[in-house]
Image (cartoon, rainbow, N blue to C red):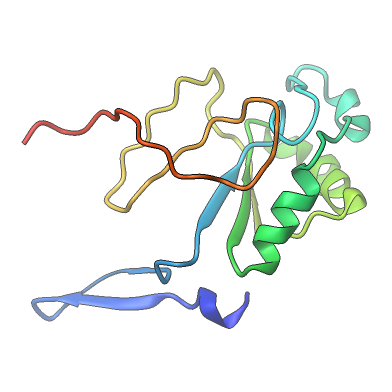
Length: 141
């Protein structure tokens, strides 16, 4: 990883906390099927090797990588599909730091974490991200 991705150590009342990335570095978790390529279910793995790459996905993700952000693919593909998935990513020239298999299927994700979580729904086009004000759900105070 590039040097600006080094984790900052945190401590409160003499106790260590989980380290964090610098604020300017994003930790991208990017889906594969239906986000960077054709949407292929686990039940049809023979299609994974020839999935069609979506326009601008490679260029945008590799630019984020070159800017020093952390790129991790987070997919509902199962562990037995790791080799074909890694080969497809490598053959298409994706730069990335990690590949997490076994994301729960079905969508409608609601992520709860003690760190900031931002979500961007892929709607057919990879572009630079822009700020937009939206409503979010939070825990009642």
